Length: 228
Image (tube, rainbow, N blue to C red; front, side):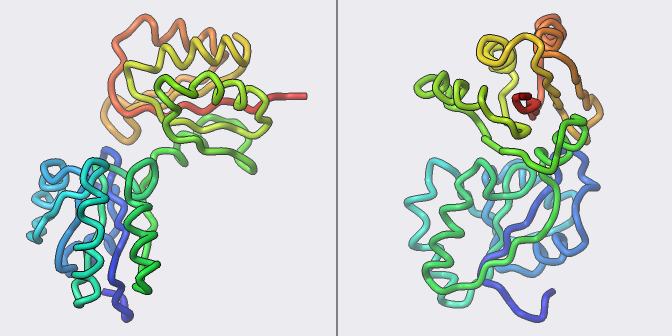
């Protein structure tokens, strides 16, 4: 492992294809004292695949505040921990940032490994400008959603969003409502998996495409910025 030992390692895991994990990530997971996982069942499958046997502990949006103090104390006593999410880089649209913040406040060391994340491949595949973009993660489900859409409608940078399958059609309808039917969008789903799909076109074309089918998988929506 690295010459300097960190208290907390943020370890990206594959977003679909299990081969998309780095050698360094595997090395870290084999040598830390405990692995903090968003879902221990999902992470258990990955670790079993790579024959890694380490204690797993849940760390997710429903228990992060309750477990933070205990985790910090254990790190102060010398334990090295790795944080992983179900897929991709931890800390993006999940509670990982809370743990990082508290570890840093305690004067402890954090290392973040480079690795898979869904937003960058989707952004690059869109063909939209990548020199300036804004990542909004998941928009509010109800309260504040229309306000967010109105602000994004005026955004001239490329916009990157995460969305769930059952809300995709609604999002595309709102893109048409607030940004216009001809605003270009690029929808990527199931990235790196067998049924990977990217549809790029005008918002009304994307809506017609996804209204015809049952949408499954993790979804990244990239929206072209407002033009002068």
